[in-house]
Image 1 (cartoon, helix red, strand yellow):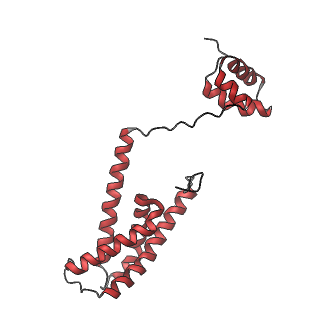
Image 2 (cartoon, rainbow, N blue to C red; image 1 turned 30 degrees about the horizontal axis):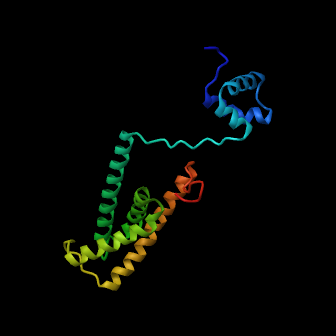
Image 3 (cartoon, rainbow, N blue to C red; image 1 turned 90 degrees about the vertical axis):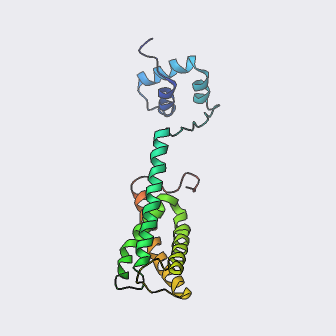
Length: 183
């Protein structure tokens, strides 16, 4: 194998530079030599061929790790909501100013942008279940209008946490929305 031979991937990386006339003479010679023997790269160079985007499959161990992380995030979200709701109507309810934004961040890690809708619904259902079943020892039961009010107030805090998580993800180079505007 000659030293001047390059792979299709390297050729495709160099094609725009060669077309724009900014590639070195060696790179241009290597690309021209490659496209003389490769029909796909030659068609790509001539603008007649657009390669199909290869979908890379996520390795199974990575999928398992992602699945376990999602389960851990979901458990932490439920525990955080449960703990935060147990503080409602008590002296320590203002700790929810810290707990609920963290629940919003965990909700974003699990549900992405849908956390704006899903987390308040989970919170309301948890609120109703804990209130009706009387799970919290010593906590007074709230009327339905109070449940709705607290859910709305706590939802504002979870939305703030979700928004912060979205902005942080965007700020650190992972655009929240894909090329077509969808996540």
